[in-house]
Amino acid sequence: MSKRFTVMIVPDRTSTVRRFRVASSWLWMVAGFFCLLFTAVGLAAWHYARIIHQVSENDELRQKNVELRSELLVLHEKVSSVQSILDRVQRFDTKLRAITHLQDPKRHLALGPVDSVRTEGGEGVDPGVIDPLILSIGEQPHVAIGLLGQRLDSLVAEAERREGSIRELETYLREQKARLSSTPSVWPTRGWMTSGFGMRQDPYTGKSTMHHGIDISNQLGVPVVAPASGVVTFAGISGGYGKVIVVDHGFGIRTRFAHLEEMEVAVGDRVDRGDKIGGVGNSGRSTGPHLHYEVELNGVTENPMNYILEE
Image 1 (cartoon, rainbow, N blue to C red):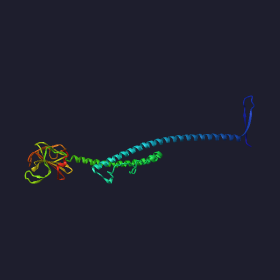
Image 2: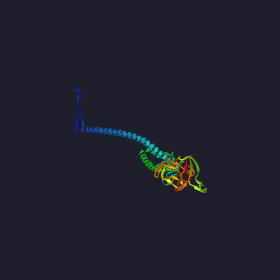
Image 3: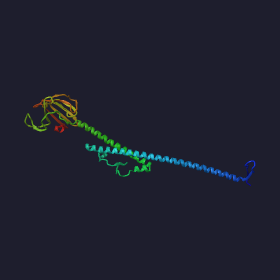
Image 4: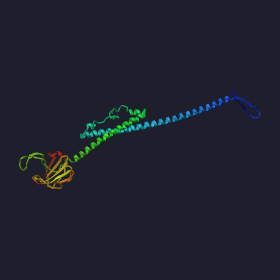
C-alpha cells in the first residue's frame, strides 16, 4: 500500500480548513515533471545560446571572407601591375637587343614584344579570357591563395631572368660606351685637306705610291688634338715623318700624327678626345706646314675620313 500525504490549506481564522490526501506517487510525478521541465528549459536556453554564438561566428567569418576577398583583389591588382611592368621591361629589353644586335635564343632573350598577359606557366593568354584567379577569389578564396602563390613564384622567376638579361645588356652597353669613347670621330686639326687616303703621285719622286693617311695643311703651331681616348705609345722622331705621336685607343685602333712642330705629351700619357697633343709643323720630309694623320685598325691602315663624323 502506497503512502499518502495530507495537505492542509488554512485560508484565515474564520475559514474552514481544507484537507487533501495525495498519494506519494503523484508527488514524485509532479516533482519529476518539474525536473524535466527545468531540464528542457535549460537545454533549450543552451541550444539557443549556441545558435546565437554560431550566428555571431558566421557573421564574423562572413565579414572576414569579405575582407579577404577584398585584400585578394587588391593583391591581384598589384600582381597584375607587376606583370605589366615586367612585360614593358621585356619589350624594352627586346628593342635594345634589336638595336644592339645582341641576342641569345638559348635563353629566350630578344624575342618578340610581349602583347598578352602571362599565366603561371609563362604562356601568353588572351586578355579577354576570364582569369581563374578572379573566379576563385569570388567562390573559393583558399584556392585563390594557392593560385596567387603560384603566380608570385612565376613572377619572381621571371623577374630574376629579366634581371640577368638587363645586366647582360648593361655590360654590353658599358663596353660599347668604352669603345665609342675610344673610336676616333673628330678632326685632329682644322685646315685644308691637301691629300687624301689612297694612291697618289709622290711629291718628291713623282711615282705613284700609297698614301696611308690624309694631309691637313694650316699654319705652324695650330693645335693638334686627340680624336678619341687612348694612351700615347710613341712620341719622338720617326724618319721622314719627322716628329710623330702614336696613340693606342684599344680595340685594335691606333692613330698616328706626323710632321709635328711640337709634342705636348709623352709615352704613357693618357689622353681624352679633344685634348691637345701637339701642333701642326713641317718636320721631316715635308713640303710645307701640315699634319699627316693615319688611322690603323688591327695593324691595317684605314681611310681616316671614315672616322671623322664632323663636317
